Image 1 (cartoon, rainbow, N blue to C red):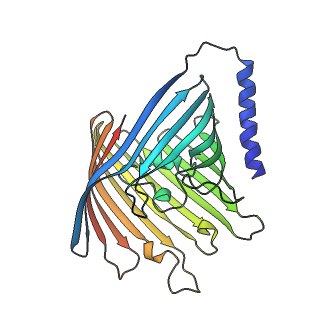
Image 2: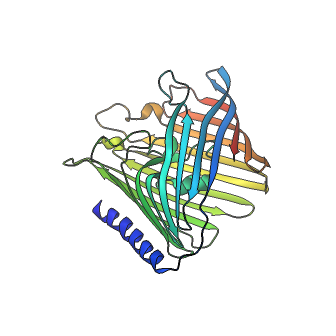
Image 3: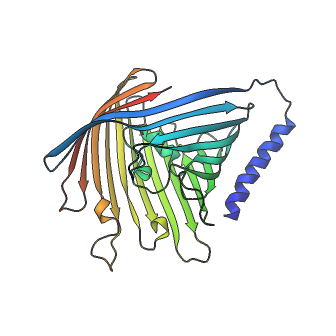
Amino acid sequence: MKKTLLTIFTMLGLALGTLTAQETTPFKPSGTPEALIFTDFNNVSVNSKSMSKFEITRAYFGYKYNFSENWSGRVTMDFGNPGVGALNYTAYIKYGYVQFKQKNLTVKFGLIQNTMYEMLETYWGSRYIYKSFQDQYGFAGSADFGASAAYKFNNVISADVMIENGEGYKVLNTDSVMKEGIGITIHPISSITIRGYYDNMKKVNSTVNQSATSLMAGYESKKFKIAAEYNYQKNNKLVRGNNWGGYSFYGNLFFNAKTDLFLRYDLLQSSNSPAKATSWNYAKDGSIFMAGLEFVPVKGVRIAPNYQLWTPRDASKNATSSVFMNVEIKF
């Protein structure tokens, strides 16, 4: 953890030193409001029984402000279904951080995006339809309290480091545990992206540590995009033996600038334990296949009719078949 902190603050110190050495230029501070809404209509069928509904699954409202050419801030509220209790919607602060950016260096401090899958979510590109693998299955929160630093060495390689509470953006830190992570992104050529990531967290005076490894490779051209991910986490939530992982494959076929066909397949499996008849996450393990079309009728609106099939690992359970009409509204 000390090495990660030292790296972040050293990079920030070097950037500040460079900044103060430059001549100041006139700058007019300005801000921009932002809004992002995910809504859909869906029909879900299980064992010949179906249910249809309209819903808003997520709504983000925030504000970005540029204090200077290098300093900016962002705050974003997240309105969504908590998934438990009787409340239909709850509100959280999703992001709240200050950012320093100069040339190839970016440093963030506060409630920041999780570097574990920030880039992977961007590459998947369709969060309004389905979350990225690590986010969807709970490998980590999509945001957390902490600090991160990213540096682009050249057009081929960039790296990032972060240190955070490790409990996500909905929970204030309740212990002294910190999560440290490092990621490296490589573009051997402009159309190929390779990403490797590793993080680790451990309680003081404990022999149990949680660690996560992620590997991703993707290719994108004007006509299509394909990508593959492998994700593995050891001792989920610092529970010994709660190991799990899986694969995610996805791609797009671009018909034109406003229409594409997308496919995705995920496989999630938890490790078996000799002391138990089934693995610790057996009831939630499984695979999902989805296919659909995406349309962009106007800037800021995306519409995606699609089909999803969830097949549980437990063969005694029925598959879940769903038809969705997902819509993203951004302004």
